[in-house]
Image (cartoon, rainbow, N blue to C red):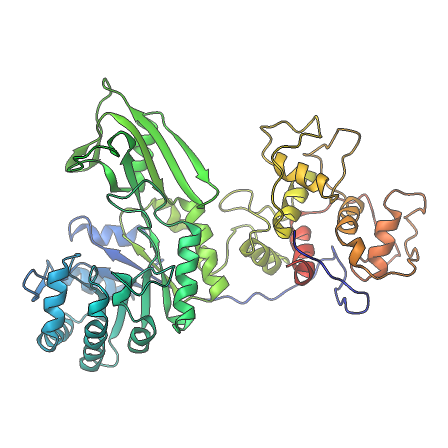
Length: 538
């Protein structure tokens, strides 16, 4: 449990639970996506599906062949012109497609290769280039940096240079991660696109594609190595990976389904057809789907061109709208430039209705003009309060006793007690059982009656006062607490809590010297409360 220290005289909080108007700083973060799958003609449809949410696209137009030479790949001038008409940049990605030898050969011939790249950019009126050379190792660190430096020198100053770099959450200097000198590369590039995915990969054990800790540690490491936060673009996976668990111990893993990539649409159809289940994995903050394919079942294809599932028990790890939204909160936390996604056409199209709002810290569609918008966004980014859905916060809904308990437990970062069962009206299946039992055990909240909690009833101002008093009483220096409210009786069970917190400057009442103890607390007001005391409980 976090330590709380509040001393009378340094508390400068204004009236708690009083509506105030706050200004909200609105950002305009960058958003790009890669185009790799599908026909070149389908690219326009993919872009149109995004509802004008993209600033730039990077199609698969320029490759490094097996001899280390540059070759173009189905460059579509109509597509380029259409994107420019939409006000979007087109920066094709240069790829060796994980061919290590090809990448090394290109670096060895960097003078000619960079000249050829610059020529292609000028010929097709591209807005720049995204360098996506992968799979080399630490021995290529200096040559790759020299390659980027030379390419920057040859490009016109108005042409964008970005670099896709491996996620490096543990600060490795060896292998694939070792080829990227983050700090120096960032000095040449407009931005680094951190590929914060493939934590679990084809051939690995089943696991998250991009757990929250993996993603956040990758951001932290980049910043710690000297990359300016406004030069970091966070990679978001629009795909999942699927494993046939029965094949994990098979010595012959050729052509087995062990970490193959699958689209959001495929995941949805497989789980529905085979009557599978989906859970939210709290540890990784990722989605996990499971299903079983029996001998008699029709074997659905993973892709339009084939690859049918085989008999067995399956796991799919992926991100859905909710977990992607959770990752987008990291942009505000670390003040990042924006996001890049792999890859367009694999996502659930519904996400584009909200993506740009989430990207810019507007997490809920029903708080855009609300007085508590800033408080709600701040508390949501801290993970202290969640929405009632992925798009709604319901700020003016009354807060329930269960929600209040959950919120304070999350804010205080208290380990949950999953063994206690004090309240008979809170069954094991209740969504907030562990938080309620923990809050009671820590003397943060009491029941309505012996063994009765009444979780779904709304919480009142005096109940919240009692909860805060239980939380803070040992740290508030109060010699005498006078009653300033004509609607609070000294015989009231909440009298001590209300008067003490009022004396400390934490709680205040209304102009007519009333506290209105039985008025309910709204979700917006709770966000405001938490934000105002956050400096004391973090």
